Amino acid sequence: MFDLTDKVALVTGARRGMGKAHALALAEQGAKVVITDIDAGECQSVADEIKSGKGEAVCFKLDVSNKEEVDKVFDEVIKKFGRLDILVNNAGIFNPKAFLEITENEWDKTLDINLKGQFLCAQRAAKEMAKNNPPAGGGRIINISSIASGQVGIGIEWGAHYTASKGGIIGMTETLAIELAPLGINVNAIAPGAIDTPMLRAGAETEELKKYIEKIPLKRIGRPEEVSAAVVFLASDEASYITGSTFYVDGGWLAA
Ligand code: NDP
Image (cartoon, rainbow, N blue to C red; front, top):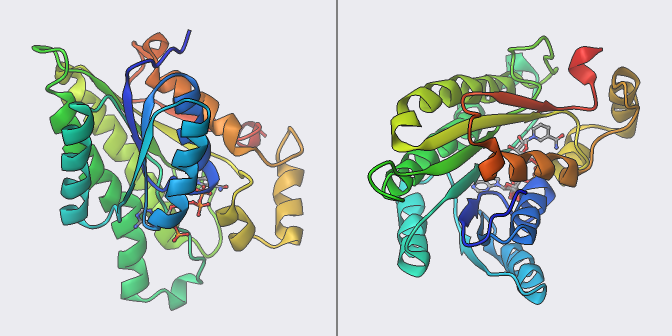
């Protein structure tokens, strides 16, 4: 089960944190992985780790908010592998700021990276996936949202721009699931809770993390690999009848 042999997967924001874990997990299941991040230097070490385990990986600098760069990288991927099967729209930023102090530039930057970046990558990916196994096409798009997306009663202080972007992702995912179904492309979102990554550590002090943990039934924050398990499942043939859904990987936070 969950065999991804010969599938080509592209992960954004994959030099560290959850993106790195997703890249390693997809490679573990046999996928050829394209590791991309705004910082290409550290991407290479992720690619090297995959190659040292006899997997196949390449790495590209990609700022997801820049359409020209998106097109250039996808062109390179198609040149190298001839196809794309899986996109993990993972790149994101969270720069906490009180609502009354968020500048227009800060708002735009968050929305450009977190939401427009997913639109740009999903649109180009869908155009490539539509060419797979003609006439039906085929592929998987997995959009990383957050439990802080406004849909489910978890807001976060100092995160108006972030929650707006993450809520937009869920809406976009549902629409893409409908529009891309005829092309054989399944589109789902994953909404993690508090996961132990550099982003979480930078955005929350130890005391704040303790408060999160109090609210989480499993009484701990999650590990990146625990989200990667959902990514691998949604990328696999076993998830063939799932599209337009949002999966919450949150240690029970929403249920509490
Ligand atoms: P990290 O900050 O650890 O990793 C995100 C990566 O994306 C970084 O390498 C970052 O680089 C990169 N990045 C930033 N801007 C761009 C860009 N324009 N183009 C390409 N890459 C970029 O974050 P996480 O691993 O924690 O988060 C991964 C995803 O999961 C994000 O979408 C986040 O919003 C979401 N998420 C995280 C949660 C958590 O608790 N950690 C909870 C819920 C959702 P740089 O360092 O330069 O910014």
